Image (cartoon, rainbow, N blue to C red; front, side, top):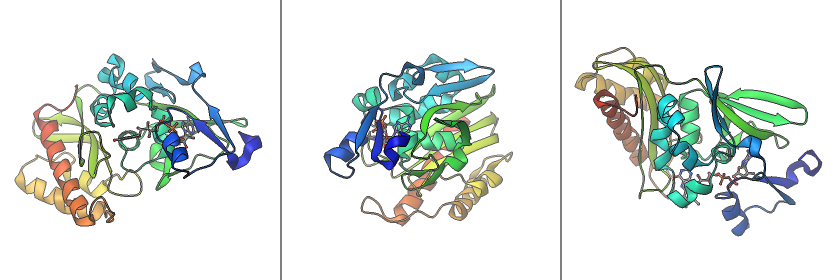
Amino acid sequence: MDIYSDGARLLAGGQSLIAALNMRLDAPQVLIDLNGIGELVGIAQSNGRIRIGAMTRHADIENSALIAKTLPLLSQAAPLIAHPAIRNRGTFGGSLALADPAAEWPACCAALNAEIVLASRKGERRVRAGEFFNGLYETVRRSNELLVAVEFEPALPGERAVCRELAPRQGDYAWAGIAIQALVEGRTLRNLQLAFFGVGDRPVTAPHVVAVLEGQTVNSELLAAVRNALEQDIAPASDPQCTAEMRMHYAGVVLERAINDLLRNGGTE
Ligand code: FAD
């Protein structure tokens, strides 16, 4: 990659890159196909951590028993990504490298503070998901770096996960969505980990919401306080798909629905 400077593009599932080339939004000098590199594919558990290779397809994550058991948030999120044909080709690493702010995987990684593994000829470096996304379709990945894998701490016993979104149609990118995981004790949520997608230029964590919710009994007064806190955490912009006011409203709706889902039964425990 180094020799092409910024003129090379890595081809993963091609579900976003090929569309961009078709529309002449990008015109790289060369394409480097990652599809033959077996080391970039797979889901494994070692030293208590779960590692997902960059070229692992969305569908493989959706259908993985290991992921369902250890990272229920990803199992919840996968079926919300596009359609089966796209999930069969699109890759975990491709989604993170693309950094669409309305995408599910970046928000899941930000919520769980996953570690993103980047490699170049100079060696390997690791970046927490919270620092990886830098803006609209921007990350801290350098042009000579390959995203090779992502590592996660598995969910603890009793932790539940929910991924909720509102989108124009099933399979479309979300107007607003949330990825959330918590330890549920009666009507109380602890160890809250969450991020919104579709409401900013990158995945958005919500520290004020977490501060209001963490360790408190969920009732109608608390939910009202949570909605107020949300206004301190997110400030969506208007675009041709949705006004800022509607996105704000949708974010509140998915948040409240996700909390209720967690209290009912959440994702796989
Ligand atoms: P590619 O298109 O091959 O690459 C995307 C970019 O990432 C390129 O710039 C490429 O160079 C770079 N790249 C890829 N892999 C690496 C790597 N390992 N290291 C460094 N750079 C890399 N996504 C969602 O999240 N939610 C949706 O609801 C959704 N809906 C969609 C609907 C449609 C109709 C389509 C066509 C796509 C949709 N997507 C959605 C996008 C889909 O998930 C893509 O698969 C994904 O965003 C990109 O993954 P890819 O493997 O296809 O990457």
